[in-house]
Length: 115
Image (cartoon, rainbow, N blue to C red; front, side, top):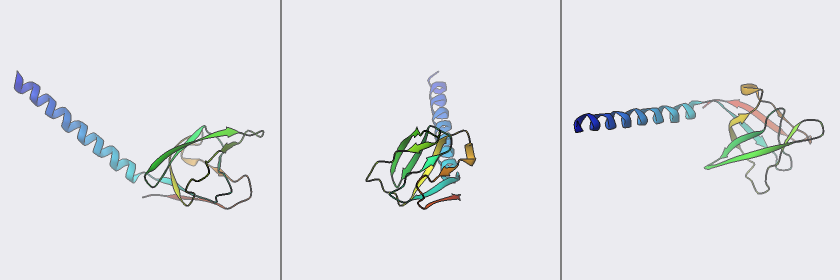
């Protein structure tokens, strides 16, 4: 009886380890949006509630507010490193075809990359 319980626990641990490993590989290989933003300007999403971004080792979520024209404006806190960060997930009606909008005439480069 004890050997069956031991086997079940070991088998379950192996399955969990394999699953977690596959998830981490899938995240590393997944395509992402690379967004380079000038500090003065925010970025906006045509449709959606938030984006989750990470910059180096930090993970952040920026919430958007809708302006009078129905566009979403992101409030990015001052002091954030704007040089380069990756959007790893977004809640948007456009899915993979998510669009970034420049409201203030500054330079925003959106580059579709895959790792």
